[in-house]
Amino acid sequence: MLKTQARKLALLVAVFCALAVPRFASAQQTRPQIVIVQVDSVLAADTNEGIDPQLGPMGPRLHKMFKYTTYQLVSEQNGRTEMGKMIEFTMPGGRILHIEPHSVDGNMIAMEVLLFQGEKPMLTTDLKLPNKGNLIVGGPHYEQGELIITIGANMAPDTASAGAATSSAQAK
Image 1 (tube, rainbow, N blue to C red):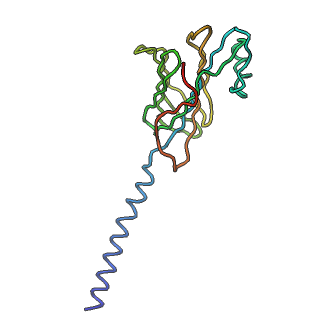
Image 2 (tube, helix red, strand yellow):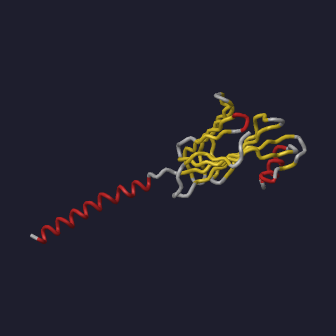
Image 3 (cartoon, rainbow, N blue to C red):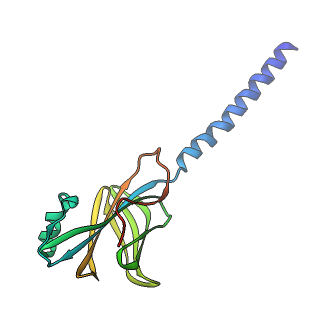
């Protein structure tokens, strides 16, 4: 009788373990991928004020691409989002930037980017950006020059969680 109860208990424990392990493995596999997004807004103008040192190595790159005499960092924002979820950034001049990462293919992050002036879309595009890469968008008129927007994306480590956008410089 004691052997029978011990066998039943062992069988019950084995069945419980067999059922619990696939659920745990499945939960790990369905953890959403997190993407860290960085958005910098730069005022490019011909006011002979030089390159803002806060731009670091990006300043000379922008000067080679756009040929203005002034590059001033207006805002720098960082955010985290899950794959398939849109993140919103408030941009200078009342613009709104939506970025929604869709998938990862190798080292490329596929995403949708929308830039709005009020409710009117100014830019809508789907693109693939290399992990830890940057997209530079030169575009809308801003103050006495042009607003240049750089968008960077990085896959976050597995332990990261999504959150809202944060700003380290106030958007004008």
